[in-house]
Every structure is written in structure tokens, then in C-alpha cells.
Length: 301
Length: 289
Image 1: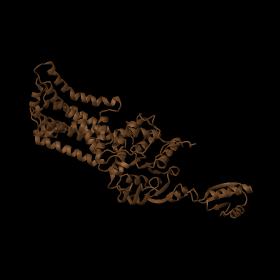
Image 2: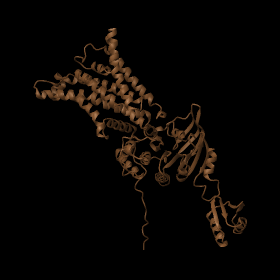
Image 3: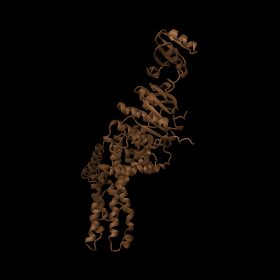
């Protein structure tokens, strides 16, 4: 468990008659946290409040342990941001842009030059870094946006819809880079998306926003690791459950399926061995918990 | 027998930055330098350099000519060929053209490309951003508004038969010279940034600024002629800075019967303070980014 990347206490933001954030209270501590929600759920507003681009009407924000209303400069130095919208100067090259932003964020010229090359290499733009951004494809522009967010070596990066507009191959590569950030480089990552699969592949925890509130919060990696499993076999499920009981494995029958509350590797080995011994076919063996998708859909409904 | 060394794979492409961070003022200066160089077309396409450098050449051409004459004709000083008052008058159209076409893009381009959200979230506060842009604008206008005056001063000294004696004789003019150049620089930096802060489209900013600077001479001249009140000419925004600067220079004014100095300076102050106030207001709220 790492320190709080972001902490929101009773956050309220109102635009006219719309309460974009309606008392959001949450602490983001996982290495990578996904903010999931439908359009208008409050994801982008929450990110802008966290980054100091919007002032909350009520409540407090702490970024990397610092009060956002009092330590703006210190926070800016330690945070990277990749907006969803187009935000790149079209008449600059990716190299010049990264160098420029690194200098603005306080790096010396020598460090800025080195870091610009490093991050552009890391996001796969080393060959194209001297071309004008205006000539880039959407995928290359997304990579440039990510590179500029990383160029000053932030402790926290906030990414708004990072896979927006990418083709499948580009999306796969982008997700791999994002996972690399939190898993291997120790950078805390907050990703906003309305694509559940992106969050599942890159985050450790997901917070679901709906109508400006936290509707659900769930660990991503914990759901499928050792929880209950649902089993479907050929033949009589009750008879197979009885045989499992003889081997010390608890199983209940639920229609054509068996429900095993413990899905640990030892139990799964026992199921495999018994099925092999008795010549029983295993038709399906799936995660028996309520799936993340179910929880998200329910929370967003 | 020793065990073989374990292989280890390093990712050399990216590492965390733990190096030093420079003070905030260096970041502001970096923004100012980057903005000024890009406005001049440096690090951009060759076409982007043509217009700014054409105007730079136009600003220094009279000085080059004035300084060149004494090299051809003995006993003639550059200040005999071109007085500082005259040079100030000659510079007016060049400074207007340079300010109107170069300064708005200091702000419009970044608003158009929506770069401000990056700046304000992870790089600079709005106040630092505005300060950097003001410094860039001052530096740019100083090159065409103050630089030629100083070049003429230096040329007069260098081409004199006794340069040190010439310097001693003329050094008293230097504060007025710098003051006049700064009056022009601050004024046009202010109005150039004002125009750029009001829109994301450069063409609108340039058009609006040129309209304001070209319409007020006609209106003020008409009002002055109709009323017979010479001081109404002070409302000519295209000449306000040069007239204010001229009051700081000795010698013959570049125009006969100028409006009252106090009125000229009042217009200058209102325009400069008003421009900076609007600029600060436009960037006070990062939400606007």
C-alpha cells in the first residue's frame, strides 16, 4: 500500500443547476486507480479539481499528501497530466514540446534534453520525435501526450481517457505502457475511462462514479484470484459434489452447476484429479464472485 | 566452483527523475525565451521568419543609413542625419506592424491549441504564465522600439572623431533615450497582449488591434478639426506611446504643435494599465483553460 495519491473529502462542484460532484469522498491509494463512469458522471470534473484547474465549491482535496488549495506549485512539480482533448501545439515537434514542458517544470536544460529523449523512446516515438505534431496520427499524438506527462518524472500521473481514439494495436501498446508505469516504475497512476476493459487491464482498483457520487469501489485484481468458483461437469452434479466432499472440498449444487466457496489452487487441483479419475468432463470452471462488470453496471444504473 | 552470475535485464529507456529542480523564476524565463523566439519564427518554418525579420530590418535600416553617412562624408554625425526624435517618428509604423502581427500569437496559439490546461495543471500558475508572456512581449518590442534608438546613440559615439569625448557629451541624453524607448515598448507590449488575450484566433486579434490603432487617428483628427481643440489628438492610440516617449527626448519634436504632455501620458497610462488589467483578468481563472 502506498501513500494517498489523491484524497477527496466531501467534494462538491456545481455548474449552474448541475451538481457535477455531489459530496465525493474517496482516498486513492492503489498504485493504479481507475475512475469509471458514464459520460457526465463527474470523472473529468474530479480530475480537474484534483489538478487545480477547477476550484471546488465545497470540500477539500489533498494531492500526494498536500493540500491542493495551498501547495499548488509543489503539487504541479510532482504531477503529470494527460488530457483527453487535443492539447498539443501543432507547430512543435514532440521533442521540442517535451523539452519545453520539462524546462517549465523546473528541469535544467541538460536534464530536460535527456528526459525528453528518454520518455519519447519509452513511448515508442524515438524515430518520429523531430516531426511536427501536426503531422502525427492520433496514436502518435496520444503517445506524445503521455510522454509530456512523464517528462519531469512525476510521482503521480493523471490520465484522462488515454486510449481514446486508438486502434486495437495502439490501444494494446498504450495499456502496456500504463501498466508498466505503476507496476515497474513506481509511479502512481489515476486513469479515467468509460471502458471497463482498459481499467481491468491497467488498474489495481476501480472507483465507479455516477451522478457526481462514488457509486462503487472495488479491487480489480482481487476478484478472480482465490475467490469462489462455479463448476459445471458432465453427469450428475450432486454425485460429483458428494465425491468432492469425501476429499474435503466443500461444494453446493445450484441447478446444473456446482458452487465452490474456496477457489484456491489446492481445491482446483482436487477437482481436476477427481474429474480425471472418474472420467467426468469439466464443461466450465469460472470465477464465482459477482463479476466486476456486474458491479459496475449495477453501480452506474 | 562458483555459481554463474545471474542475468539481470535493465530497462534503459526510462527512469525516474531525481535531479535538481530550478527556482520558479527560471521556469518563467524559460517560457519568456521560448515564446519570444517562436514569435520571431525561430525553430519554425522558414516562412514564419520572413515577416518578423523584415520588420526588424525596417526598424534598423534608418539607423544603418544614418551611421553609414559619416563613413562616406567627413564632418557629419549620425545625429545630424537622423535625430532621435525623427527616428522615433519613423519607428512608429514599424512598431505598430510588428506588435500587431507578432505579439497576439504569443497568446492566441496556446489558447487555440488548448495547451493552457497542460501549463496550469502541471507547469505554471496563471500568474507565472502571464509574467512570462509579458517579459516575452517586452523583449520583442524592445528590439524594434528601444534597440534602434540605442543603436543610433552607439553609432553616433563610435563614428565620432573623438568617441570618448562624444560619449561624455551625449551620456546625459541616454536616460531620456531609454525612457522614450521603454515608453514605446511597454505601451505596445500591453496592447499587443491585450489583443491576443481576447481571442484564440490570431487573425481576429491582429485585425482588432490594427483597427483600434488605425481608426483612432482618424476619429481624433476629425474631433480635433471639428472642435478646434488640438489636445483631442492625444486620443490617437497609434501615436500615444511615441508622443509620450518624445516628451522624454530633447530637441525638436517630431511633429509640430503636439498635444499637451500630461494628456498624452494620461492616455498612455490608461491604455497600459487597462491592458494589463484585462490580461490579468483573462488568465485569473485556470478554469478558463
